[in-house]
Image (tube, rainbow, N blue to C red; front, side, top):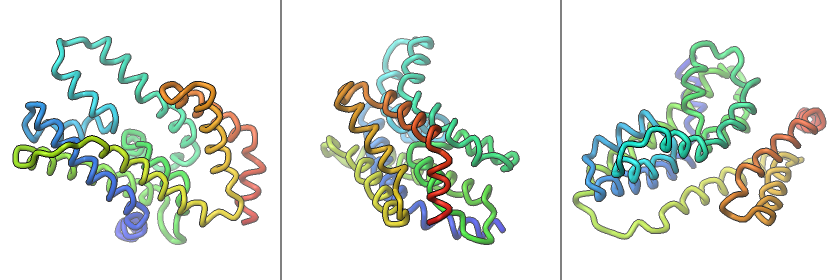
Length: 231
């Protein structure tokens, strides 16, 4: 059962693998040139696992100890995960103890796959989501560790490497658009994001966009589910 779920989960994570390995290496190199040994990016990749937050952790570790400021900043940066968690309430039901790790490992990219990827027939849903989550974190840990180890040997400008995440999300979106005959959820996401970007600007649009998406998905849940069932 587990092997079958792992075999089904791996192809779903290939776009994330290419992005996480590349950006994880950039993160490991960044930590290394900032004066930290290779096990620091490995440890943060295992414990924090927060993408953009991990890059910010580098500067946090170099400043005087300020737990309250660190907590508030981390909460604001990762606040979008509140919306992810609410969206996954139904999907994580019945997964047993695996749910604890599924909650911990829910990143932007993992949410995109777990929420939209169909569970193959005959594959356990809980293990399918578990292996998607686990594989994605292993990609990030591997990339961060390699970057930390190679950081002392390589010297190049890492500016612009974070664009790989945008490219990866574009690939995931295109794959989902191919599968859905009526892409209502994608249109809601694009419309809310574009509208909030125009209203609030690039630095403040994320939370309003997520709130708008969540509200519309809740209001039109039944028509969307009916359209998906018909397709």
